Image (cartoon, rainbow over all chains, first blue to last red; front, side):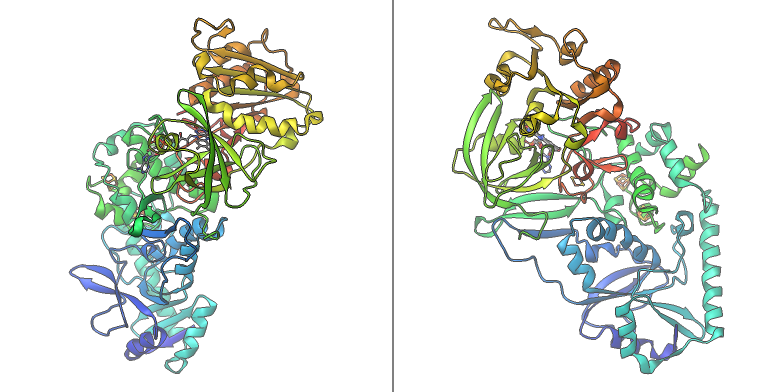
Length: 342
Length: 274
Ligand SMILES: Cc1cc2nc3c(=O)[nH]c(=O)nc-3n(C[C@H](O)[C@H](O)[C@H](O)COP(=O)(O)OP(=O)(O)OC[C@H]3O[C@@H](n4cnc5c(N)ncnc54)[C@H](O)[C@@H]3O)c2cc1C
Ligand code: SF4
Ligand code: SF4
Ligand code: FES
C-alpha cells in the first residue's frame, strides 16, 4: 500500500499508461463518459466521482466482433495494449461474470482473452454516487476489493495506491519514485471515506424501499409467474437498452454474412433477452412468448442462474438500466416489490 | 482458425437422400475427421447464410463423413434443402454431452422417437449395435404424422435387419396403403404393446416437445424412474458452447450441459416443454 501526493497524480498516470492506448473519464454535465485517447491528459481527464455512462465490458467484450471468414486462417483484428483509468467497482466487479463465461469455462473465447490480457485496469474508489446507484443492495460496495491491477483511493492527504495483480505491482515499480509507504493516517482516512460513502449509497437505496442485504435470489425465484412481471412488462418496449448498457449482460448472437470479395464472414454481436425471438425455436415455438416472461428471465439470469453457477449476483448495482430504460422500468422498484411480496 | 471455437471447418456436401417430402439426409465430408459420440451435436453452416444445430444420424464410429438428417422448416434449412452434392458447407463440433452409454449396460433400452427426432436416435442405435452384447434388449417405438413421413422407412420397418430388435411404428393419420398402427406414439407405449421391464430399463426420447411431454408422462406411468428417462432438449442455440446465453434452461445451458438430460435433472424447472 502506497501514498501518492496529489500533485504527482498526472505524472503517475502518464508513467503507468506510457505506450498504451488510454481509456479515461471525461466529465459532461453531471455525467462521465469513458473515452479513448492516446495519453492521459491533465485537465481534460478525471478519475471521476462515480461510474461513466458506458459500461467497461465494451472494452473486452466488444459490441460487435468480426470473428473471421470461412477458410480464413488469419486471427481477428489486433487489439493494442491499453489502460483504463478511473474504472469503478461496479464495472470492475462485473468482469468476473465475463471472465467466468469467456475465460474460465471451456472453451476459451480468444478475442475476449486477448482484450483482457491487453487491458490494464486502474480503478478508483467512488467519491460520490449517482442517484441510481444501489450497489450495497447487491452485496457490492463503492470501492473495489479485487479485479484491478492498480487502485487509487482519493483522500485529503493524497491518494492511497494499491496493486491488485502482478502486472499492477510491476507498473508501480516504474512509478516508484513518486510513491511512499502509506501511513496510518491516510489509510484511516481512506477507510472512513469508504464507510461514509457506503452508508450514503445504502441510505439512498433504502429510501427507494430496497433493503440492503435482502435475499434477492429467493425474491426473484419465488416471483416467477406472478403479476409483478405483467405489471412491469407493460411498460417494456423491447428496445434491449437494459441489456446493452448493463455491465454484466453477456448474451450475444452469431450472425453470418458476405463481406468483401463475397467472402463469408461471421460476427458476434450483443443480443438482448427482451427481444421477442431470443429463445424462439424453428417452427415458431417460444418458451418465453410473453414479455412478462422475458422480463422475469432477465432477472432470473442475474439473481438465480449466476448465484447458482458462480455464487454471486450478475448485477452490480450500477443503475445504468434505470437511466437507459425507455419504459422507465426501475430495477430497484422491481426488486423491492419482489422482496415485499415474498 | 481452428483455435476459434466459433468458427467452423470447411466441409463438402457429398450426397443428398430424400427421406420424406420435407426431410433429407445430407452426407457431409468435413475437411478433417470430426469425432463425435452418440447424443452430441454439430453446427452446420451454409456459407454466407447462417448456422444451425443438428445431431448426426450416422454411426459415431465413422468420423470422415457424417450423415445429418434435416427437416426443412426455416431460413437455413430451406437453403440446405436447395443444395446439390458438391456444395461447400462448414461444420463445427462436436458440441454437447453424449448419451451416458455406460449407464445403459445390462439394461433394456427403449427408444422413443417422433418425426425427424428419429435422426439423432439413429446414431444412438448404431452405437448400441456396435456393442449389442452389453444391452439386454432394444425396443424402438416410433411415431410419424403419416406413412409418407416415416424417415429411414425401409430400415425401420425391417428393424434394421436385426432380430433382437423390437420395433413398433405408428402414424397419426393412416393412408390407403397403411395397415399398421394409427394414433399418437403414446398409444404404442401402452403395456400391451410394450413388453419391457421399466425397473431394468432406460428410455431415450427425442421428438417434438409435445410428443416428449406426453411420452415422458406415459413412461413415468409405466414405472420408469425419472433418472432413467433421457430427453433431448432442443432449445434456441447460437454459440453451442455455453457462452451466448440463448439456450438457458434453469441452471443449465442445453448446448453445453445437454442437449440430453435425464428427466430428474430438469423436472422441477418451469416450462421445459415449450
Ligand atoms: C441440439 C439440437 C439438435 C438438433 N438436431 C436436429 C436434427 O437432427 N434434424 C433436424 O431437422 N433438426 C434438428 N434440430 C433443429 C434445428 O436446429 C432447427 O430446425 C434449425 O435450427 C432451423 O433453422 P432454420 O434457420 O431453418 O429455421 P428458422 O425457423 O428460420 O430459425 C430457427 C431459429 O433461428 C432464429 N433465426 C431465424 N432467422 C434468424 C436470423 N436471421 N438471425 C438470427 N436468428 C435467426 C429463429 O428465431 C429461430 O430461433 C436440432 C436442434 C438442436 C438444438
Ligand atoms: S442490471 Fe442494471 S443495475 Fe444491475 S448491473 Fe445491469 S445495468 Fe447495472
Ligand atoms: S430498457 Fe426497458 S423498455 Fe428497453 S427492453 Fe429493457 S426493460 Fe424493456
Ligand atoms: S447456444 Fe450459446 S449458450 Fe447454449
